[in-house]
Length: 224
Image (cartoon, rainbow, N blue to C red; front, side):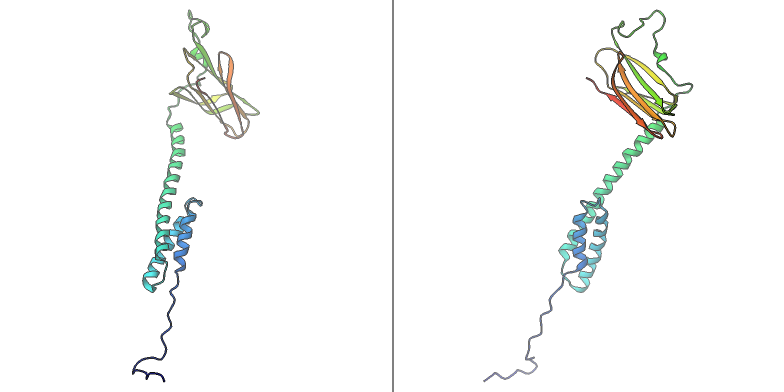
């Protein structure tokens, strides 16, 4: 014998409604995680999807708030990190261009090794003076007749020449240990081959070549 039904009581319990997970929250988390390998491009979408999903969760009560927060935080962090990386990379490239443009250009014809030739009455070779002679050379072939820029350095002393006809030679003299030597030559034309080399006491210690329009040939000789 069953119990009598109380007034106002339904004979069946109302069905329990299952809460669903917000799809944009899941997408925000996935996009935030993939930002590590996509250079930050998906991180921007993670930020957008994360903020939108948080608004939807507040309105309709769906699950996924933790995933939405994680995706948003990851998105902002990786977007900032990758943006900083690209800014620093471009700043370095632009600084190199600005440095080349800012170095004073000598007035008059291009200087050659004759400027450093011994004066009358001086010793005729670096070896006789107890030092070593460095020769920086640049040669153009196959149509390369001039260099747009030639930059060379001896340790931290950097100099640049522009509009230089090839072949080119610069002679330096040093005493004691060999300094750090650097030679950078850019082709002024749209064809040809640029060869550059560093000699010490007539012996080639570094050489390289570059082919094509405005190609750059560079060699560095560190201390032995």
